[in-house]
Length: 161
Image (cartoon, rainbow, N blue to C red; front, side, top):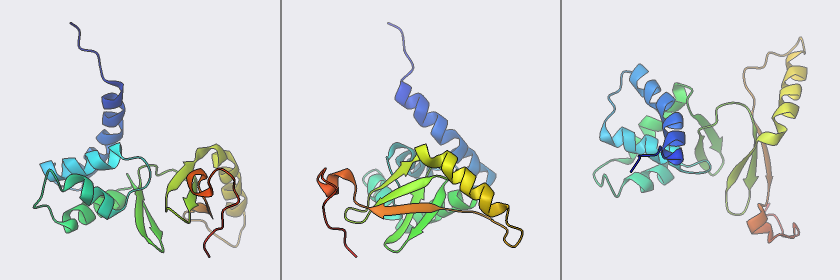
C-alpha cells in the first residue's frame, strides 16, 4: 500500500508554512497553542474573528486564553502574513494579504473574496497613485449587500440600514 500525499494537507502546509516562518521571525516559539491557532486560521473558510479562532481551538486547549489568540493573530498581522480587517462589528482576519475586493453580507456577516475584480482594482490603484497630490500607502475595497443565501436567490430581500 502506497502513502499518497493528501491534497488538502499539501494545501494546508503551503498556507501554514509562511505563517509559521513569520512567528519564528518574531522570535516566538511554535507552541502547541500557536500551532492550533495557525491551523484553525488556515483551515477556516472566510474571514474569522478572534472569537471564531478561539472557539475552534478551545476544545483542544481549554485553558488557553482569548488573549493568546488575540496576540498571536495581531503578531501575524504585524508580520504581514494575515490582513487585519476592522469592521464596525469587529475585526476579521484574512489569509489573503494582496489587495482584493471583499463582498460583505449585511445580514449574516459573511465576507467573500471577489478575486475576479483584481485587475480592475489594480487599474484603480494605478490611477489614484498617478495623482501628484496624493501618496497611496494601502487600499481596501468592500462592497456591502446580501449574499445569495440571505437574499434567498431573488436579490429582492431588504438590506438593513
